[in-house]
Amino acid sequence: MAVSYKVLLLITPTATPHAGRGNATAPTPFFSHSYSYYYYNTPVAPSLLLTKEKNKRKNPLLFHTPPTTTTPRASATTPPPPPNPNPNPIAAAQPMQGGGSVWALKEAISSFIQASPPTWHSALFSNFLIFLVGSPLLLAGLSLPGILAAFLLGTLTWRAFGPSGFLLVASYFVIGTAATKVKMAQKEAQGVAEKKKGRRGPASVIGSSAAGCVCAFLSIYGAGGAPFSQLCRLGFVASFCTKLNDTVSSEIGKAYGKITYLVTTFKVVPRGTEGAVSVEGTLAGLFASIALASVACLMGEVNASEAVVCVIASQIANLGESIIGAALQEKKGFEWLGNDFVNVINISMGSILAVLMQQFILQNWHT
View 1 (spheres, one colour):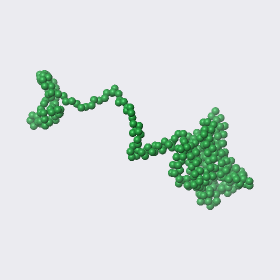
View 2 (cartoon, helix red, strand yellow):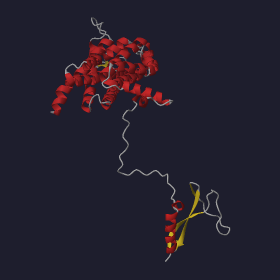
View 3 (cartoon, one colour):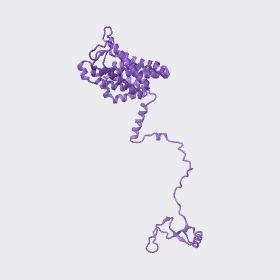
View 4 (cartoon, one colour):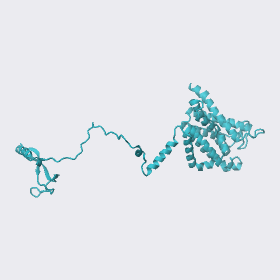
């Protein structure tokens, strides 16, 4: 019975292809050393197999199997190569060429700005970059001395409460400046507009942020421990909600108030009178304080219940500020009681009211 066997035939010691029987072309040779080998799958008789085995013992070179160069595969159980015992950290830390150095610089700046907890250096650097980029907006709402005072306020805020606290103050500034610019020509014609087209100076900046600065300093130096630090944060948010409520209600009331009256006597008075209020201005101020308290809540400065407390405290404080303005401002013996001083009283009331409400209402509510 014939079986199939692979027969190896030596044809020629050269590398030239050789024709087989007839005109057919010989198969492509496999070269090893100086011999050419051809492989065929042909039926072979058993007697020929015995002859092949004898010839193989006599001349093993004819039946030499060429060496293979295939790299053996690693088995599944082969352990991975050990790590480099002496890595080069300097080479690994080198930035990629081209954009790699720029990327490394951005990463360094980002990590410096986001330092936790914030440091005085990161606060100064962050404020410098932000004030440099936002200088056109700052010039629209502040005088040059006012910008310097705002820079100090921003640095203090960043150091005490980080980027979230700074964003709160920036939101207050943007909304307040926008409200001040509403119908500026009309306000100027009526003589009720802020001086210098609404560009506020250092006295206004300090008067608007005095209570917030006190809260920031107390938070930085950890007065009273962690619980008191959270109260300082609450007082900080409430002070700016109160001031924004005051600014927006006053500016929108001057622009759109149909009827303005004194809060003490309900007597109708012209727009811009100290202590005068209007429905339009009061609603606008309320919505502004809600917006700022929402920003503080979203940024994690206060929780939802504390945000509500800040809005209520700001509304009560502004009512008290209107009473002070109607009863005392521009009265004989109270010439010293200017707008900036009244602002300090106003925002201080807002901060203190928020802290008291948190301690005596929210605490009892949760317990």
